[in-house]
Image (cartoon, rainbow, N blue to C red):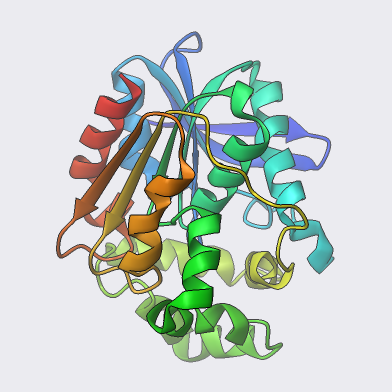
Length: 274
């Protein structure tokens, strides 16, 4: 069973789900677009039952209490700052960090900038940003896969995504996420300003600095049917981690790993965190 949390920070209060003893080994799980903390419901519950203190927040823009109005408020420095602010409020000096999709990008940047704060890193779907940048320069397939990121800068994106009972938003999940869960994501993103806030992650532009190689023990999980991230960046990610590194490739699974194969992913996380 999971519990509901509110995590106050200088930026506002983040809604979160959590499980496990307060003094358990801390794990923070970061969701992606267009999801919410409940994408990690299975993982949080199992980690909590195994004695971890697992917390998954609705990230900036997804939590109504942290929904600033300016695009610049969704830059990577702010997103990484949120991770550290939440960890500080939770009393965590060091913690394990898990991320999927955009949450994975935030996890990579956090590990690069603050390796001393992390015990272990696990990233699902999203390759290391350095590997992705190289693939975008050299691999036509990855450029085509990533075209949507540029398309979503258009101001009409929200209207198109929510038209006809949010058909475009629903199609993103490729019928691999339970319909009741998709309904909940659509309900949340239909709130005034919510979808714009989520899309501002894409519109905020690239991070200003360079990302370094990762010095934290890392698990990277990628699936062969991922529509957003191809094999070029996925396979190159190992070259961006200097610490012990584990790569797990899941055959015939889409981008939505945490919800399409929750038991498989949770088992991999438990093995890595152990």
